[in-house]
Each structure stands twice: as structure tokens, then as C-alpha cells.
Image (tube, rainbow, N blue to C red):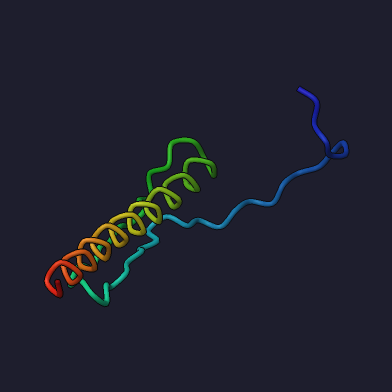
Amino acid sequence: MKTNHRRGFTAETHTKKGGTRFQKKGVLSDAAPVAMSDFDSSNGNRGMAKQVRGAKKYVNSRFRFHENAATKKLAHESE
């Protein structure tokens, strides 16, 4: 596989983002989804990055679901 960097290049080590906690508090709904990325990443930095991305996606999707449900409930009650 061809690489696009000079001979003798060494990449910097990434910071450990394990244990990062994500949470959001809903305004309309009382839901507050929480997710945390673990410290056990099996694929080095890529595994760690995928865990962090997955935790963020989980929190955002759960938050969006509960807010949308609360909005639909308010719209239905006002009719």
C-alpha cells in the first residue's frame, strides 16, 4: 500500500479519549440521555474514535427522539 508521507515519518500519538461522557437535557421532554465511551478500545486509536463517535450518535438520536415525541404530544393536545 502506497503512503503519502516522507520516509522516517512517525505520527503523533493521539490523546486518550476513553471515559468521555456525553449527555443532553431536553427542554420539552424530561429525558436526559447519557452515554460514556469506555477505556477498552480493541483497535487502537481508531477503535477509541469509533467508541466516542458511537456514544455521541446515541445521545443525539435519543435526544432527538424524545424531543420529537414531546413536540408531537403538545401539538396533539392543542388540537
